[in-house]
Image 1 (spheres, rainbow, N blue to C red):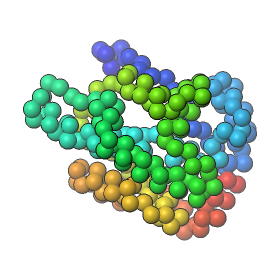
Image 2 (image 1 turned 45 degrees about the vertical axis):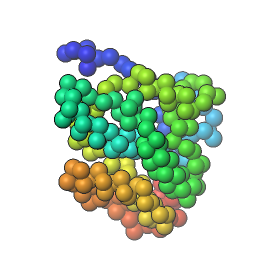
Image 3 (image 1 turned 180 degrees about the vertical axis):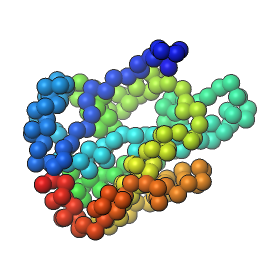
Image 4 (image 1 turned 90 degrees about the horizontal axis):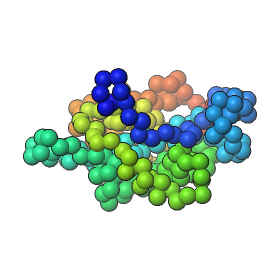
Length: 229
């Protein structure tokens, strides 16, 4: 927001990671989507297989959670020593080696879950390229770096939707899927614990899980049948 009644649009997504429920109606859904938005006029093989694949390609469960966690000490430092300044999550926190080590580990766990669900193990940066650019031949890391230049300052607090939405609604769901599929999720679970500890909240109990969705008793095959058919 630049001033009351005026906003500055920093970035426009080209397309998002669509999927349909049930997945048997994907061709029907994409026909509608491509009429509304020409960017969705893509080959059917490029469409996400089902709603879990689309959900796990929400970039915010990776970049918002890791980015703001790494930014937390920067926020504390500025509040104490430079109260008139605020760090930039994309420009500052996501330019650190620590952030990218965490992203790589978390992304590997996400891709293991995707593979177990019968989906392509698409890395975070490649999913961002699909979302952000018409030209999919570009280098994904270059595209991410160009986005950082236009990103706004902040967030101004750790108690922000980047954590309070993307941890319980995103990471907790990812963790729940990993548990169902017997996949070890140490990075995901550690990040949930640390973010909850900073805010004194139990995101595991608050968050979206297969059980909270009423799907906890289903086997893997039953779960896939439910979302596909």
